[in-house]
Image (cartoon, rainbow over all chains, first blue to last red; front, side, top):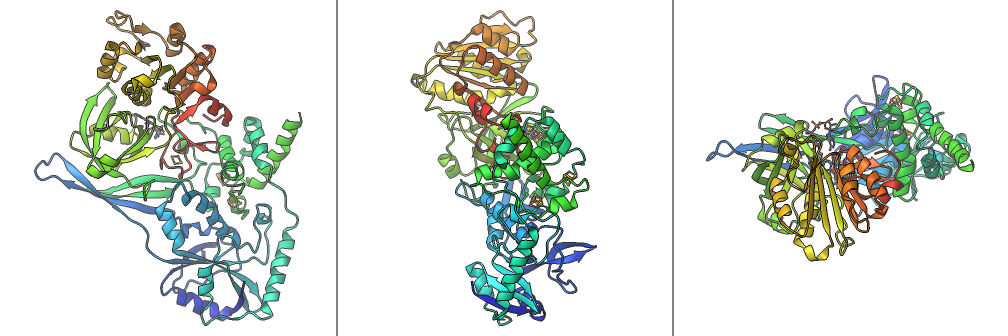
Amino acid sequence: MACKFISNEDITLWLEALAKDHVVFVPVDDCGSVTFRPLAEGRKPVLDRVPVRSPKEAVFPQNETLLLYKYEKDLEDPEHSTVRIKETLPKERAVVFGTRPCGARGMTVFDRVFDNERIRDPYYATRRENTLFITLACNKVESTCFCHEVGSGPADTAGSDVLLTPVQGGYTAEAVTERGGQMLEASVFADGGNKCAEAEEVKKATREMLGEAHDYSDAPEKLLAVFDDDEFWEEQAAGCISCGACTYLCPTCYCFNITDEATGTTGKRLRTWDTCMSFQYTLEGSGHNPRSTKAKRLKNRVNHKFSYYPDTYEKNIACCGCGRCIKSCPASVDIRAIVKAAQARGAKKESK
Amino acid sequence: MKANPVLPDMATIMEVVEETSNIKTFRVRFNDENVMKNFTFEPGQVGQLSVFGIGESTFVINSSPTRMDYLQFSVMRVGEVTSRIHQLKVGDSVGVRAPLGNAFPTEEMKGQDVTFIGGGIGMAPLRTLLVYMLDNRDDYGKITLLYGARSPQDLSYQEDIAEWIERDDIDVVLTVDNPDEEWGKKPYEKAGLIPNVLKEINPDNKGYAVTCGPPIMIKFTLMALNELGFKDDKILTTLEKRMKCGVGLCGRCNIGDKYVCVDGPVFKYSELQELPNEL
Ligand SMILES: Cc1cc2nc3c(=O)[nH]c(=O)nc-3n(C[C@H](O)[C@H](O)[C@H](O)COP(=O)(O)OP(=O)(O)OC[C@H]3O[C@@H](n4cnc5c(N)ncnc54)[C@H](O)[C@@H]3O)c2cc1C
Ligand code: SF4
Ligand code: SF4
Ligand code: FES
């Protein structure tokens, strides 16, 4: 990978140049929490704090229009009307700037679901194709970080087009993909020189701060072993208030709802983020609900990430270890601790 | 799969049949004749019906691929979308996303006896398979139908039933929980819960059993089939979960790593036993 250098000052020039033909999402301080917003005057990127919200919304917006519809009265027979529908595929080109590696890796979890041999979701796939990820490697870690335990790391390039690493006076920039390489041809970049060695040191040091990695590879079978252990799951979910913050902030969660919004004879069909942590999510017409308690819903969330998804997608864990769900949970529910506890409990059950 | 899996095709309602006080059957054709001509599906597959401005809901295509004049859906009124669908009349537009999901293993079932056990609206997925088998009658062994509802007025598909009773290549038994004075005069009219009547009929356990109905009925019917000695991999059922996207994306309908909208709705009893206990 060719390594280039960009100074702190030139970053602004680069972003402005990109903004000419892209919507550039940058992490900004919004009332104290760092969240991605389109670059605009007076919005300064915040690059020294990990964004509270994940960058997924650039590709998978909190709500997006799937189609427009219009009822047209049949003039010959006014009792009847026909409906016209119109597909509304996204067109804009976007750049996500300054996401951490965990956030960019989250998109690879989506990719396997939304775009594979069986199905291609055109809304997701079009946005994904038209969105570049410029990722910023971490140079410090938080107690909630565990990217190194789920196959990632503080300089992971999965899901990124360009990887920046903070060094003295600016950032080194490495192309991850071909289109990332094309971006680095801009004149704001200088040859990396000895900055590149410095960047490698930063990456190594950050990885060391995280310490040894716990092994989750047997989580699927151990989670299955404790599936019917109600006591275990009730204990884990004791404090949960079903707020859904964990899922909305998560870079790898993609549950959604589809609803219609009518305005007179026209309207739109929307796709909106939803959360498997809510009671209504699986409530059936008969009144039956397969996930009637928060313990069952938490069990499904944990299992989806650490058991069902890896079973379906070549052992890839559907969690990037970003720790957002842990940091923002009002009840301090810790997904790492739950999986570890299930592994320990599952092992004990098996040895009995 | 088509280019945009969440985009419906427009269709027009050709006929509405009032089955019971809360079930109506809708026969629809796609507006685009090419779509209609090229449309294929297998018994057991489902579709999403759309009324724009209200939303979409999942229903089994209960017509048979052997009769492609129209697609037929039977809709029980339970909530918003289903109430709106019930207001639709002949000539009205409706959006259709189909076919979705898997199908009954009609090839594997060839040459075998088949016992159908349907309860209430659960008769809908059985109807498609039953009509398919009757239209390919030589491919299958003895066919038995046990269909139950709460009361005689709650039995759907009266026209079909009359026809099936006339035929001598299918055994029909009807049962209701609450019989009225007229009920029980005919030899095929029984009273009582489906699992009990099933045990009374005592069908030969070598063939297939196909069941669908309310969750509680399915549960007890599976137990009865077990008692009667049917093999777990020859008991078929269709499952219902709350669904939205219907194509394995929204994450709503999973049981373990299986999605009812993609890996189902048809499951073998032996497959269900492999899944985590979350029905
Ligand atoms: C594979 C499959 C096949 C089905 N086949 C048929 C059929 O042939 N005929 C038929 O009448 N019904 C069928 N259903 C059930 C039908 O989809 C629901 O009754 C319908 O979606 C309810 O929509 P609604 O907007 O009227 O209800 P809502 O107003 O949305 O809700 C009313 C109640 O129904 C619940 N509900 C919403 N959607 C579903 C759902 N998909 N499944 C269960 N409960 C739900 C809600 O939680 C609420 O309690 C099938 C469902 C599935 C999953
Ligand atoms: S953030 Fe915490 S309290 Fe809220 S739903 Fe998730 S686990 Fe429960
Ligand atoms: S489950 Fe938690 S730690 Fe894992 S990706 Fe989602 S928010 Fe991050
Ligand atoms: S209905 Fe969306 S995943 Fe099955």
